[in-house]
Length: 500
Image 1 (cartoon, rainbow, N blue to C red):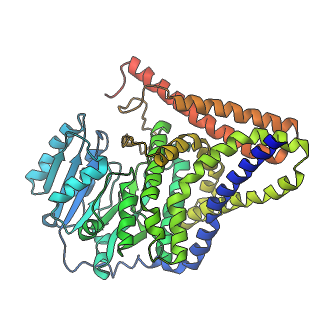
Image 2 (cartoon, one colour; image 1 turned 180 degrees about the vertical axis):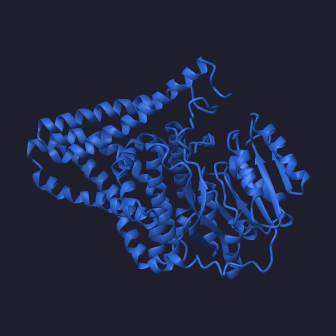
Image 3 (cartoon, rainbow, N blue to C red; image 1 turned 180 degrees about the horizontal axis):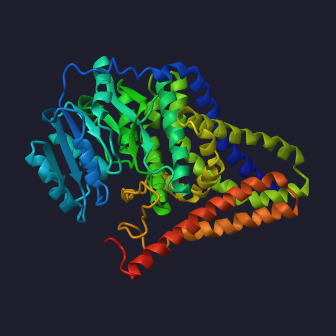
């Protein structure tokens, strides 16, 4: 009985933590409708006129991006903006032929009068934050636009973002919404798009309209250079330098403007291992930033509701270990329920399903807001939910490393210029050749959770089957897709078909 009570207590505590973060969807939905009329504030182009063209520095930080960097450079060159007012910095930390590709590609633009600096570092000190800081020391522009290598910014980007700085001299950053170039490439990209739309369509937009802190997303935005320096400049002590700087700037009194109705198209990771490494970096970096800034936020003179929103924003990744705990304890819970000793508690636990409803509403409105065919897109919500469960092992490792201050390399997410169904990543460079130990654990967790499904069927505990199935599917997808990816890559290597 004592062991049963301990297991049940840990399980209920885990569900309470998950309910706390998941039910935040109700809060976001409330503010979504409360601030809905403000969503159109930024689309009157008649007001978005530049009487003068300030000098702008466009920074393009990259590391080994041979497939997409020329596409990005070309899109920046096409900006509808006077070239004499445009400085382009290519912040290149590459160790492969990307550097030579860049040098050859930009020469024609330099010869035609564009101000392009190719800053190649022979080390990755500070990773992306370090590269941005080095570029900033040399930047001529009053404003700093930043784009990662996988983006294709629109021609009107600067004319659409810069006017906000002249409306309010306390605006530090204008952030645009991400759009997805390859949303419909695969199930992997469709489910990623749902996750990102929840962030960009609901979280970022609603928090900004309601007056809460939001974050720079690392790309697709423009900074006022003065604000970067005032906030303390780029710092490399976290893997999410964007979240870190944007919070420090807002704590100093700077404002952020989020543009819901102007997008910056970008490429989603098209294969699972890159997605997992991206999620690991984002999760670990957010935990590092939480440790760094949480108490500073709590000690500030912000209103209580703003502090609560910042708590959710900075701490929500702490949910991943509790998702993993729930997955592991699901099978013992089936056996404990069968004893009949805790029937009252199990009836009470049915309230936790409201967290599922909260998450569904959150992502439902993110799809309805921007897509006419939202019914077809929200269909992937169960797949997205299962995928989030499957990522819990990967992201729990990230959380724990962040909590114990274990430093790791900034592992960038490789891009392969995947935009259409005919494009393929199978023969590209930058892919991993080995199956990780984490993938083996994911496969074991898949088998374990599927055993829990069988046990639930045997004991006719119908309510537990859907969640056990999603855990099994999620862990299985992470493992099988990772193994398949490594197999295909090694097969191409053996056949000498890899574009290396």
